[in-house]
Length: 156
Image (tube, rainbow, N blue to C red; front, top):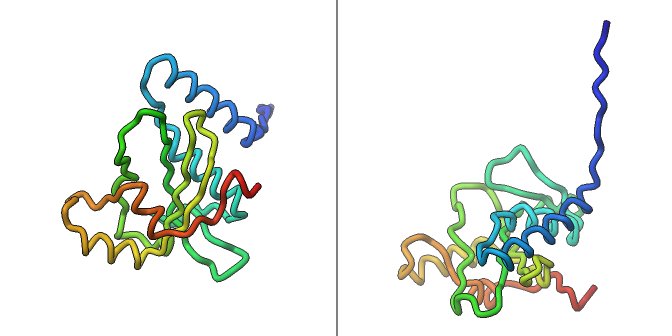
């Protein structure tokens, strides 16, 4: 006698939209942010830039399968009104093999508004030249200044 298990198929895009709604409602209700930005950022960057998700390599989230197999680390940041003036993206792992950082910027409803691409060599030079922050992070504004805007809501 064999057991049959029903396989459920999910629409990931629909789940991500529901996640945005829940996260925004939670923030509006509690004043706290749900830790979903990293997963949303990976999904949105891969979807909007037509990248290929990469699961097997530690510290690399996606590759550009259509070009030169560029390896990407993907990070996200929600910008809330009245939040900190100098928001940071957080520490990057410089031990892994990514070549470019993709920084996904979100509005308070967790909708992506911009994606910036920053070359790893530029990031490393900036971190060496500004040793004030010992954790190895820079502000979102700094990443925007040294990066290239590769997608925006307005361009869609």
